[in-house]
Image 1 (cartoon, rainbow, N blue to C red):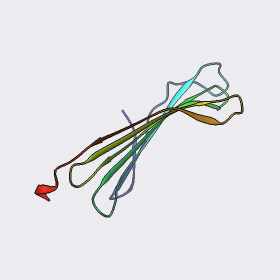
Image 2 (tube, rainbow, N blue to C red; image 1 turned 90 degrees about the vertical axis):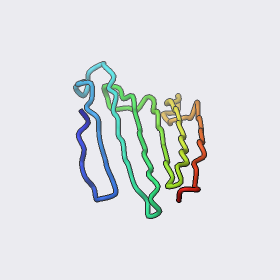
Image 3 (cartoon, one colour; image 1 turned 180 degrees about the vertical axis):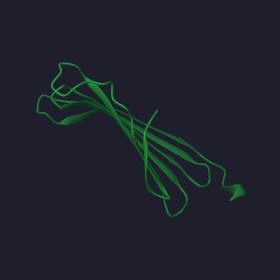
Image 4 (cartoon, helix red, strand yellow; image 1 turned 120 degrees about the vertical axis):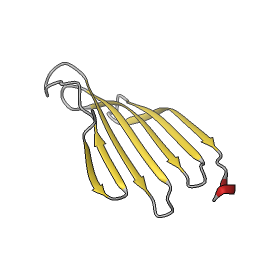
Length: 107
């Protein structure tokens, strides 16, 4: 179950439970943060970030999916995968963008 904290009427923020790794262990931990917002036009924006973190708290890789569902039914999904390079910075290694056109006749 994902604990949810209500920020306001139009936002939802959730952090998933981790895999129970204690700081300093030689294990990896997966951390997920999800934010959902409804903008002034009624579009729903969902940002889901998953990070692989080592026992010292260093982020090793991330996968972020941003999904926008428009009031006309159009759905845009942008998925980005990044890994930490030798320089300690995250570098995008893959990005996928998908668009499904909605039908605005009913609007």
